[in-house]
Image (cartoon, rainbow, N blue to C red; front, side):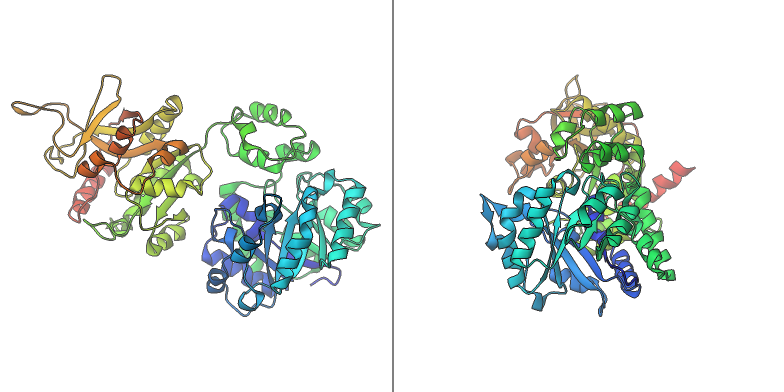
Amino acid sequence: MSKNYNILDCTLRDGGYYTDWDFTEIFVKSLVKCLDSHGVNIIELGYKSPKLGGPYRKCNDGFISSVIDFPVMSKLAFMIDAKDYIDNGKVNKDLLFDIIKEKSTSPFSVCRIAIKIDELRYLEVLNECIASLGYEVFCNLMTASILSDEQIDSFISQCKRIGIGVKYIADSYGSLTPYNVRKIFSTRDIEGIHTHDNMGLAFANCLEAVQCGASYIDGTLLGMGRGVGNVKTEQLLQDSGTILPSLLDCIDMAQELKNVHKWGQNPLYMMAGKYTIHPLYVQDLNGSNLSNSSLVKSLNSLRGQSSYDPSLLDDLKEQRAVVVIPARYKSSRFPGKPLAKINGKEMILHVAEKAEQAVGKENVYIATENSEIAVVVRKNGYKVVITSDKCLTGTDRVAEAAEEIDADIFVNVQGDEPMINPEDIKRAIELKKKNPNHVINCMSQMCKEDDPEDKKIPKIICDIDSNLLYCSRNVLPGNKAGVSQGTYKQVCIYAFSKKHLNDFKSCTKTPLESQEDIEIVRFLEKSIPVKMLLVNNISYAVDYLQDIEVVERLIKDDNH
């Protein structure tokens, strides 16, 4: 380790802005072991926050203790965002003490407070609370590039007065240059710097800070972090001359994440750094389908927007669509159904791969209450949202998962439909964009394997404009002579807005929904219009064990 400065790695905390603070156990174990063996002084594992998000958004002490292989020589740290604990003009101590427990029972030893200049009046109380629990307290002053000398001096004076251990500045917009860093550090007692790489100057800014006396430098593996990302931990380690093979192994795993989330320097982030545009604007726009000219035009309209307001992007970007696959283990008809193997592969993976073909792996989520299902899908690189086991229906499970997912369109693809056509998912998304006030559901004609009188198959009847009139397990439509021609069955692809899902959520089923045991009926009973999309693919839901043989035969026939 370099004698000149301490390295604090915050890959899991800052990188969580891309993964929703959810990482595989093998990645976390490997990362911590690698950083520890390289002598990294502090490893920041995430936030302790009351906000929704993955496990590294909350850093529950018991969870962290179950994941990390101890002993670890590096100090373990978490961060809190000051604004999360400010309520009605004062620090919410009850909330803070509910989330942060005493150091004596925790694997952590360091707490970092991220704070803005207009929140400094709360710092003394926050510090008192956290210090009383036994933690070493650091403080990061955000948005340093837009602060005056007087504001920075006020921060330092406040920290010294109340006994903050380590004072940091954060280049939140990636706008600082080595000249700016020298101006800030050379005449002030500041120990640490957190840099963003918008201008390609993060490493140079760190070295300049060290020359001016800084003793703590933040880094992340491959620079993974909000917006463009940070100085790379591997750069800091190379600067200190300690490179072991395990670092390259971890970089390979981080590269897989980068291939999906695509952080890193580009001209848009440079533009954001130059014009003090909050990095989340670029991160959101990078995830849109806008053309290059539209991206540049959008960023120009955001010049000077140093605070993040996602509503400003509503008219600038395409809607984000995600697929959420509800996967319930405790099926009454077929327990463990999502893990049933079809041609040697778990059924949930068949469905996830079809969804991936439609929206990309980064936009596929599996919502489940079961740890076995979660392990299987995470092992195969899919995102998981753990939901309660009290969800009444698959759509209730999607609605619960949607609380933790930032998207505009949520597509529910049932986990027992392994023959779903990805093109039908795409068509449902496009129809939803054209019909924002409607829920979208799919239907197809009965195939030869289907029995119209089979109660497990929901039948569809709609008007001439494809609006759903009713859905039933009984034969629809019918005539005096029996079943009429043109019988359609439901295909379990649905597209909702978040508002539709919020309106759907309930602790009880509606009367007709309960009688039919068909969740789409709840929307009709709530006077929410449903538009049906006719699809032509072969669809066959797996409700019973014997259905596996049918699906395997259909897949074989389809492949030949």
